[in-house]
Image (cartoon, rainbow, N blue to C red):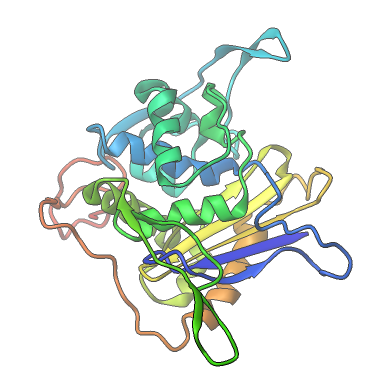
Length: 314
């Protein structure tokens, strides 16, 4: 099965929704009713919380083995998170960690900033489902609906401002009199500077990282792949300043889509196909930079200041 949701992050208007393969075969709307693990698509909430508290995209964390004692089904077990490719990269900037969806660095970042602040921020930006307060939150183990996730990403796209999603703008009678009218209310739920720094890093997911296929769209875009353990849920959620869309793929009864499958391999091509049509008649638009942000040229690998002409300068 698959689901897609697209909305305008500026007012919350749902522009497109696909709830499954065939409505005649199943009336279950996976876009709004299916609670699934977001996997790596949850990571931006952790990085947003970190960027709001001091670390920058150039902050370095060691990508090396780590273990935790945690409870699973009442039993105390040892949990050792692994990266998708089973490799460790040593000192890694937060920018590279999110671009390449590196699990271990993300878990260590969550350990550093704490679970509660991440849960608080996720709820602020639109995640309504209950989030489990555990280290595995870093890898997206708490189930959410596609609509929740896409709506929350809309806050990143809209500079930290949230608009509740809605499907019906107005209801009129036969004479055209308005019987009901949706009134958009927005609220700043994240600092604009934090939202922009996160978006800047998420642009790198498409420019250099796990979402690189989307470069074919040739316009400023940001996003994140999502792949759960055993590839039972695959995602891509991405956005321009005026449109945020997310694709989920999986079986209704959870089973693996194949051990080699990822959100970048299966969900991203559907997202690209949708965005090609949805953005076809719009001019490319970049994300607005808040006034009080300072940019520095740094080495993409190390995060250290470097001359702008250096091959790894960013």
